[in-house]
Length: 263
Ligand code: DGL
Image (cartoon, rainbow, N blue to C red; front, side, top):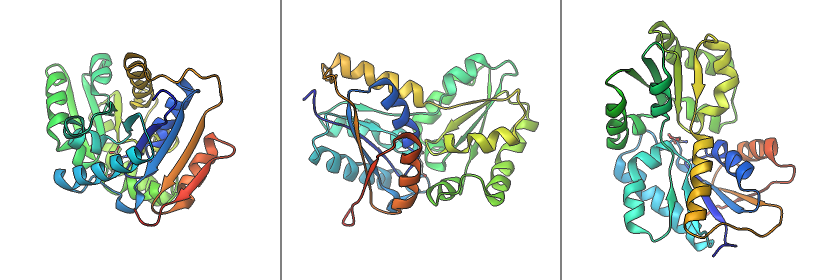
């Protein structure tokens, strides 16, 4: 089992922002990244529909021999991870908006969370937000339309900048000092966000924490690949090979990207 790959999936290309952290921390692992871009965005779908898509992704990764699966999508994690853990017999790692560190560090006691409708309306998100909302005002904003820009390879157009501003300006006016990126696609907006928000606002996401948790679970489950070799990452997508190819080239010189038509 130790030599089997780790599976990572997202509704599209966003989970690569987590993949890059996993690769940094776990250079001996083989990884299969699955982008379900044909069905993106997940964020506007029902909980049942999100779970069905997640199960399809998990079945595909299991048939490729994965030993552990990282659900590299906040929307999928907050809506489906409990069921996935019940229905499948392998470890799952999920990602949720980093409310806790933001709320604990906030000096203005006001933080913003930018995420999808699916994440913000989930029970898991509500439970976490409630835990930290006693001393902190948590302002939630649905980033409707942002995932579509990123999926199409647009990280910096004027149209995108204006859309992002319309979400973030009210948060800055409300005096947030932390902006939590609650969607794995959004780290690709950080350069643009830095032009929009004042320097006093810290932007945080959960990618590095997910990588640490992945390593810990691999150790605990005796699944860590200790073979001294270089990693091998394979990318699979069912739509729009162009964007994932562009992103994978940011991290790896020779990334293999395969199109799976029938998925
Ligand atoms: N990357 C997904 C997330 O973290 C995007 C959601 C979507 O497809 O709407 O929530």
